[in-house]
View 1 (tube, one colour):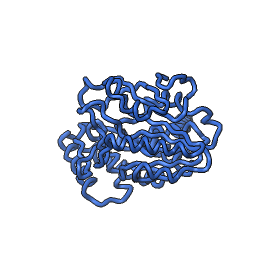
View 2 (view 1 turned 180 degrees about the vertical axis):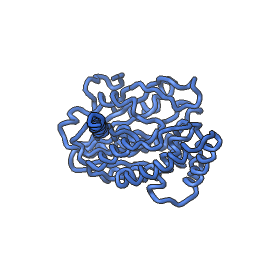
View 3 (view 1 turned 60 degrees about the horizontal axis):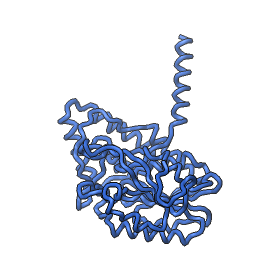
View 4 (view 1 turned 120 degrees about the horizontal axis):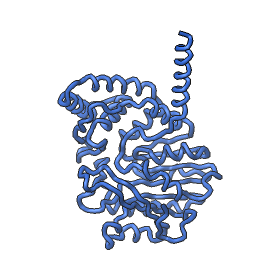
Length: 331
């Protein structure tokens, strides 16, 4: 019995150690997420990122892959500002920061209810009931986040899409036992969000300029991507459209940032000219800046034949180390 107790103690200690080194990462699957691109983005960050105290600002935070990566890698990030137009997404960030344990408890209950349903039809009916509550009922922030995570884990392809009335309308995904409550990730994300002085905003990206600090500021922009063609337009994360006029407004905002001392920015978007050599929209409007190409794999498309590798643009107001040309492939 003593041997078994000793073994159990070692296992418990080992599990505690594993939990303590869990790397923070997105708590939601998010279309256009940057998880697979992080190593390439790292190579194109401003030089000397480790030598300054940083205010990190992300006006389109989305699923937060870049946010969690930056906070984990750069301990010198002292202040953070994140923003998104999606109010429920921002509610989720606030809930995970402030109420992780209550969220975990409620998610586990929901997960057990879902797992207990034996048929796919019963699970689909449960999903549709949750979707209706999410769209129609007044919920506290923890339940709102609980249902958002549930829908993200059980809907088709983990999409977030709304109709013209702002109602979540993604269909059932037919996942029988998805991980709905990832306790370790929620706790790791909560811990790192509480490590820094963080401001969490819900609104237009332009408002983030009000939070520039007197020291060094680094902005990372991951806006809704400009579609490569008429059938690839998927940026309905909110009922507002992010069209070419909005892309130009964002370019003007980036130009405005250049007037602030010690402020660098990097922006991701689709590589339209790789699909159509005559479509040089981004090369034209960002002609004064450094443009690099990175490789990404996209699996969000419902048609498997349209998934695969493609290039994306990474635009910045600085020249990353190792990039000698204005338009280059730095991968």
